[in-house]
Length: 228
Image (cartoon, rainbow, N blue to C red):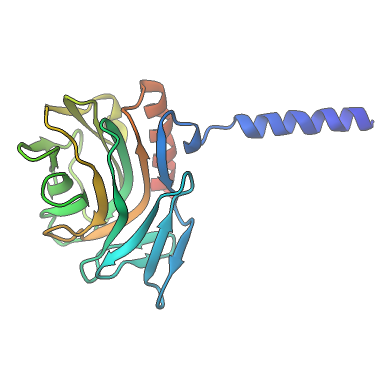
């Protein structure tokens, strides 16, 4: 019986270890996981958000960010969080679960490193992606427009020449644009010239574009997080 029990235990361990999670992504840089590794300062004010994978930490860098259950609410006092050192992998993929809480979606800054490299929602159907210091790529969101106060999954990938935008179930049909500038990195969540009037639930940062297989698994995971 002991041998049978030990064998069953080993089978259970093998099944558990084979289950997919974000840490199995190739070239993963950081996974800022929902409701995990968040430290508070005064009251509900977020002080740091540490990555579930690796050693990266977003620290409060301006205004206030509040913890709202397991989500980070940037829609207060020009909230911004910073890595301290820009994430500069060259090619990349970054995915977020977020929602916008503004009455009207207008220039909502998501991630940036100043004026040369940034991602923002210009309005409910368009994203501006800037790689380097010249071209501002105004790209239509694939699929449906953003609805205020509704969670969605949003992804940007760049392979050195092509920017691809993904949203929710439209990950098989991204919007694309060509940009040959040199990426100088991303450092901040939230405020640049304009604030981010919204909340962020999870962030995944990868040091390369994703394979179709990895993208499908990641989107499945993030849509589950979106629906928590």
